Length: 401
Image (cartoon, rainbow, N blue to C red; front, side):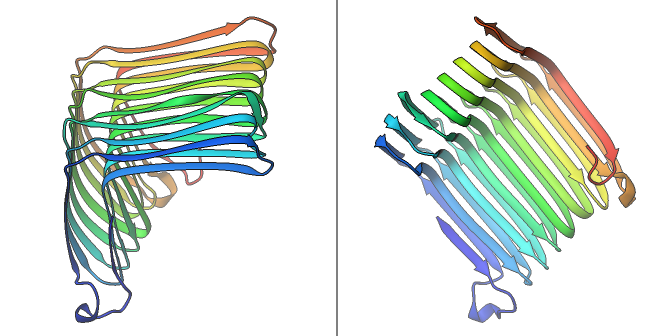
């Protein structure tokens, strides 16, 4: 990992220069694996596994900065976490497993930043997998997050301005999977799998302004997120999966967010969440999958969005299965879309919005939800939504839902 910081008030000759040039190439494979064997724990059990091909951070405070970054990962990246519980994993059980091909973050506070950022992954595999084996074990609360990303970049601007040009190209098979089996969970059990082959996150705060041009291409084999959970008895069980080929999430609080975004997905996207319990208070399986996804908004100024989305890959499949014996509330949801855009501005901030959007979906899109109750329950609800192209634009008040 490379870390660069331009400190407040420092002279260029006495600190890192006001230009950052980052070149990283990962040719070999990266592995991060952890196994926890637990008999009885009273307090907490924590397991973390993180693998990344390349990783860097560059920030500036009260000093203008320019960033030129090129990242490339051609090998495989794998992160695994295994938990085996004989009796009790404690009041709190936490598992975090992440695998990323290229990860980057740039930020500026009180100054101007210009950045040209490039990320590429080859035809390898980027995989995050986590599994909890406690068929005869118990826990108070369980929280498991499994996340995989081909290319990931975060941009932050605080009371500043920025000009960003960002390109992401993923050729890897990107997957997150696993789940867990518990005999008894007295509180909440949440298992999540999150996959994004290309991901851009922008956050602007304290009257900032940014112009951003981004292009994302996903041509790997698949973008997959899957979780399978089973309980003897659980008070509140939630199994959540999210898979996306290309994603841009940009929120600005300031005078301008001008974004030009191009997304091309050629990969198969699948999100699958399955859960079962013999006895439950509430039980839910929530699966979401999108080939290309954009969310942009500005609170306080103007938003300009010019977006193009093309999905011609192997299709989008989203599956949700919930099976319960005796309990109270059971829920299942599956949501699938080829291309999706959301744009919003603030009504009471004199917000303005200019939108140009072009969406083309030529792949199959399917969502399936199955609910099975073999005993008695108070309520059962299943939802399945599938759409080729969706676009939503709105102007709202601050804090409004």
